[in-house]
Amino acid sequence: MATPFISTASARKFALLKQGFISNEGIGRSKNIEDVVKSIGLLQLDAVNVVERSHYLVLLSRIGHYEKSRIDTLIHPRRSLIEQWMHCASLIPIEDYQQLLPIIEARIDEPLSERKKTQLGPEPEHAI
Image (cartoon, rainbow, N blue to C red; front, side):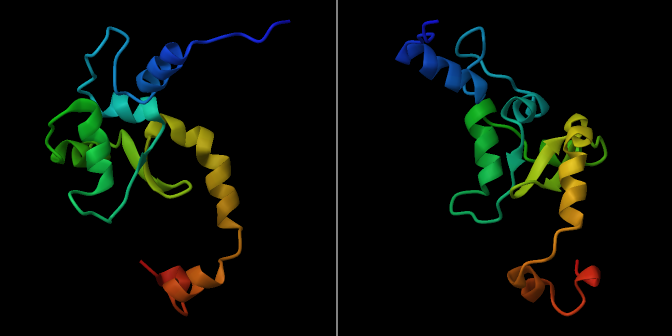
């Protein structure tokens, strides 16, 4: 069986589509933050900023100008996005939580690294 061929242009368009930079209809983009996060899988939170915190820039690049308070509303009171530690601090769609629960629960039993013990102090169960 021959290996399927996909042109460079098609591969590029597919990558842009899946990352939320373009829509199926062409250059239009979703204005819905939830749709964007669902499409890209998660929204990595990052406190480091030069221009703005990176998760705000990720959304800006995909939906254009938006009110940052819309993200807060999706976290609380709507709870359609939840904060969770995946490979990093992230916002994930609530409907993905059940699928990710085995990974989250397995992490509970992992011993803390020396770095985390140092960061959390002598009583990590009380650390905020």
